[in-house]
Length: 172
Image 1 (cartoon, rainbow, N blue to C red):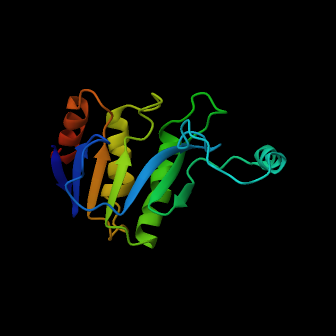
Image 2: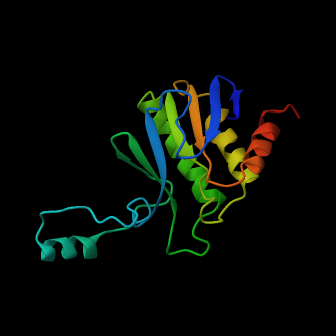
């Protein structure tokens, strides 16, 4: 398991199937403006009348990219806009990371699990995400509560992530 530190934040990488080597307060998932990505294929159980349910779906408005939807210890970070082409990019991811940093500090979160945002939609390269992460989270002097970051890496080769983290932590 790759582990490194930047400032006072310990960073470790692993898949969703692995257990983080430290306590996690919040798990961040990537979300889209219409809130369908995090829901997956499961429809929530409801006792609402079907007509009311359909009416609420028709009246639903998209959540702006960069917003954070908090559901207990699952935070849904809106970085994908399915109405746009491309569906996400460095600007929406940077906005999301800024919002995430503010909420981490507001809620005094010390351990967080975060996916590599935009990777699943081919919106961003790993190196570019790592640079945004470094700028908006890891080197953010206003962010004093965060101590541990579990960076969730998709199944498959982890070497590009390991190399990007090594470059991130190496002096210029």
